[in-house]
Each structure stands twice: as C-alpha cells, then as structure tokens.
Length: 121
View 1: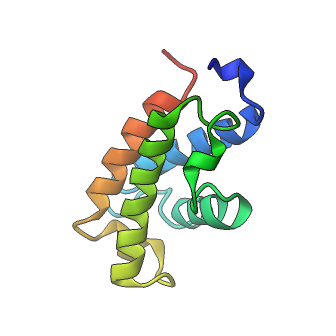
View 2: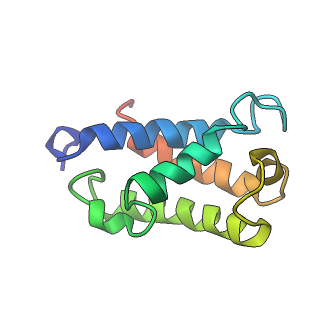
C-alpha cells in the first residue's frame, strides 16, 4: 500500500513527527534537551488519549500504517514506553524518564520507526 492510499495520512504525519521528537529527546544535549519537558507527554497523549494507536496499532493498518511491519514497530515502541511508565510511574516530569537507563531503548526504537514512517527516502 502506498502512502497516498492511506485513509488517515495526516495522522501518520503527526505520528511521524512525534516519533521524530521522541528520537531526539535527551540525545541533543544530554538530559537538558529542549524537547524533554513537553514532547514525551505529548507523545503519550497522542498515542493513548487522542488516538487508539497505543492500544492496538494493528487496527490502523491501511489508515495510518502501510503494513503489519510498521504496526509491529509501533507496537515495539509503545511496549518500551509502557515499560518505563510502569517501572517509574506515569506522573513524573519527563526528565525523570530521560535520565533512566531504559530511555536509550525508546530513542533507538523511535529512530527506527521514524525512518519508515517518514516519507523521506
């Protein structure tokens, strides 16, 4: 399925931007990244509150995702986010999560996902 055939291409673009931002949190200038204080919370809101992508990405194949591989990569990132929230709690400032040893896994997963979600070659 081509990007242009998706029924919700705007949601895909928003997701790609969120994933791009996640891939940079804490990696630009260490823990004091200018993105950390609002981007993680925004990502959580988009994935779980604004859309159902965080609950079951496979339901969005054909609308946001081109195929099962994209859906599975998203599910992998969401799983890593869930792990950190379950371990450290869901109400901490972003800098707490960014400072954990698990944060690198989120950044790495977000980078991989962004590469397939973006319409850049």
